[in-house]
Length: 162
Image 1 (spheres, rainbow, N blue to C red):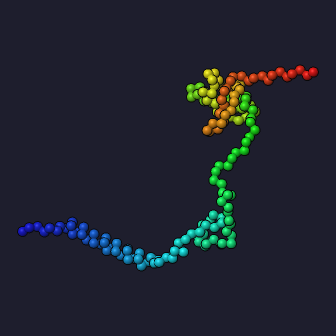
Image 2: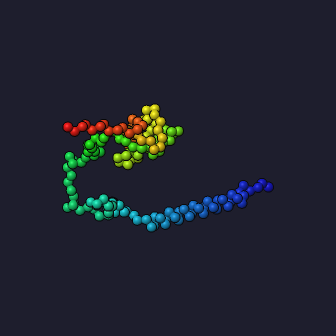
Image 3: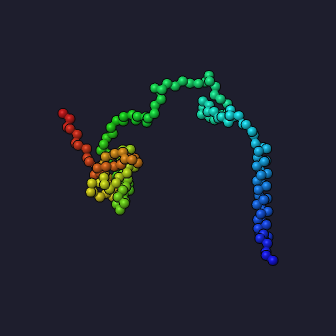
């Protein structure tokens, strides 16, 4: 006699598949029964009021403002021209790392900390607490000291009064 083609494992798997199929059909029927059919398009709309808040009510046409095309500006606001500052400044070196090639100078007038790179030193070596004169240029990350020289220049002698 030959063996039956169906084994216990095959029969069990077939029962599981049939059970999953019937559960899926039941869930589908339940979703269809509970679904809102034909939701109106107006119920799905969302509106933005004059303050920029999202609401379900349409805007009041009496509060509508008319804006001229000429009044719309799409650009960066121009910066006002500033007076040219004194280009030559004095200060003292608060920190300088010669191995990394950068440091900071504290401006004597504004007490602002200004970045200085070794390329701006022009071959001189500076250390902490050295008095220096320098010029300031704006870099991508802020003010940078350039054309740094050791020592503070002495002001020219006053002309004798006659």
